[in-house]
Image 1: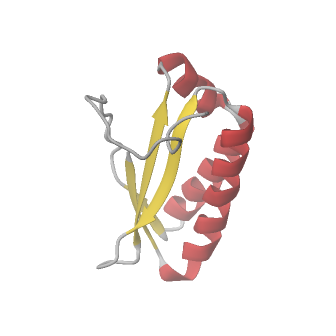
Image 2: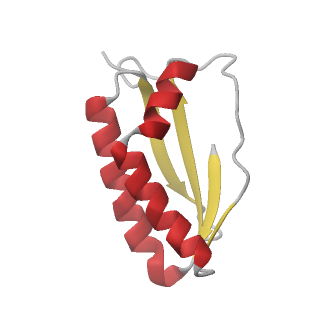
Image 3: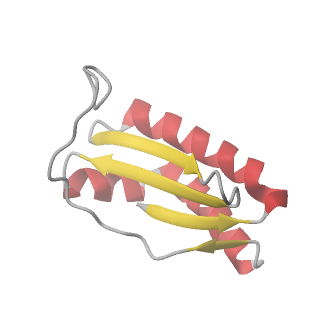
Length: 107
């Protein structure tokens, strides 16, 4: 899970970059289980990216993918300009999940 704070002037640009990134990843990365982007209702500049992978190899493949490099490049550029702050990622291990049938992973 990644948290970032994005300047309002660049928020839509970041949304679009991650929307495209998530679409490409979900179409091409078999080990991707989940790719969600959420916006904090109390602080719209705060975004949360939640990603889940079948295993460490799937995560490594994701990190090496072209769509990740493009989205990350935009975020890195905004960070360098002081228009985005990326907080330290949180690595979580799934203990269990409850979800409606057919909503997780590839059916």
